[in-house]
Each structure stands twice: as structure tokens, then as C-alpha cells.
Image 1 (cartoon, one colour):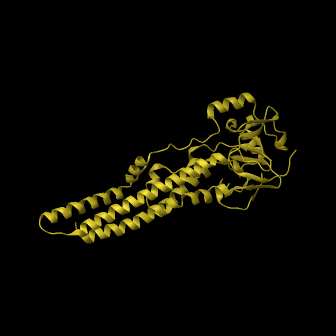
Image 2: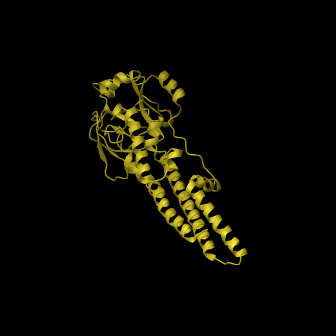
Length: 309
């Protein structure tokens, strides 16, 4: 194989790899920067659009290349959420109409009746437990093989094999050209290095997702049957009215119904150390669910809150 062509392929591989790896390495920062988000109500954020924008990356998109496609995918996911998630734009009275089974008392949400035990059991049966299924563990070999879903890496492997074949063909005709072997070694080295780096990054991302489990509380306080009850975290359902106090962690993605001097620390999600002020007031029309200050996400810490009782 012509040495100039091989050198061009090496240069193109470096450029291509950067365009693929750059958005991939930004994945954790993307999670921190994009997901920003007393008496609160549990929301249905388990829909596909919210999960795409919050945590996961679709398989086909993960195999796409280029920074522009990365940002295009992110904008698409945000648009999906903005069109399907509207509770942050609703007033308390409107939420009362949207969630009639929660029996929200708009003048003073702390006096709301909440879901009935029967309705909560029904929703728990239909919607499942308040847990996020962990990603399936994959073996090291399978993870390595999956890296070759990038078609250009297959092309480079083929180029390396052709370089080796060319070397032996020339050697059989009496020409010893070690440059072909050097080029093949460089191509294979780049492929193996980038595959190993990609696998390492995937495992780090998986560890971060697993660590979120350690941040969650064991129990939650909800209003059901006109009284406050302590239940297991996994039994919290959509429409539950949750009572959250200072020092506790938020048990689910919630819409604030009543809050006074509320500050929530979101460093685990956003990366920002300073606590942010949150309010129960409806958000403006141009504000997304991730930027709304009346939406608090699961596992965030309530740093300060005035007692409502």
C-alpha cells in the first residue's frame, strides 16, 4: 500500500478520533451542566424524552461523530423535554386540575389530602417502584468488540491488514519495505489505544451512575389519606405530595408546591458548589424544565428550608 495514503489515514484517524472523543469526554460535564433543575409533588419524569436528556445516550447517536452532531443531539433531547414536560409552567391551581387525585389544596398545600392509599397502590402497580434500573454489566471482551461499531475503525483495521499483506508481497519479490509494517503497527496502536480509552471512560460513567444510589434516602415523608406518613423510598409514586425538610435528600423528581427560604445544593448533579434558591412560583414560558427553580431533581440536598408546620 502506498505509504503516503497510509500516513494520510493516520492523520485522518487522529482528527476523526478527536471529533468523536471530545463530546464523549464531555458526557459527565454535560450531565452536570444540563440537568439543573416545603411541599412538593412527584412528577412523571420517567418518560423516554426526559431520560434521553438527563442520563442516557441513544445507541445510534452514541456512534455518531462530530461535535456538531453532539450538540444537535443535545438540543433535540432538550426540545423533546420542553414539549412533553410542562408542570413548571403551571400555577398551583392548574396543577390542582391536572392532578385531581392528589387533592391539592391550593391556598395552603401543607393541608392537602394527598393520594388515597388505594390510588397509591394502583399507581405503584402500574408504574412500578421508584428505582432506576442499573445498566447491565458487560465483559471486557464484549466492550472491546463493541468499539468496532465505529465503521472507520474497521476501515483502519483493514488498512493495517493491507499494509501487512503488502509488506509480505513485496518481500516475496525481493523488496524489504519495513515502512508498511511500521504504518500497520501505528494504525493498530491507535485503534487499541482509543478502544481502551473509550472502555475506561464508559466504566467511569457507569460508576458515577451507580454512585447516585448511595445518595438516595431510605424513606420519604408523603401526605396520603389526609395525613403525613413515612414510607419506603421505592414506594413513592407519581402524584404523591412529599414533605421535605432541611438536611434531607429529595426522593424523586418533584414540582415544588410550597417553599419558604428554600435552598438546594445540587453539586452532585450540576457541579456547582453554592446552593441555589428555589421557589414554588411558576416559571416563565421561555424557561426549560432543567432551568426552572420550581423543579427539584432526585437525590439533591435541601440545605435550608423554613419549617411550614
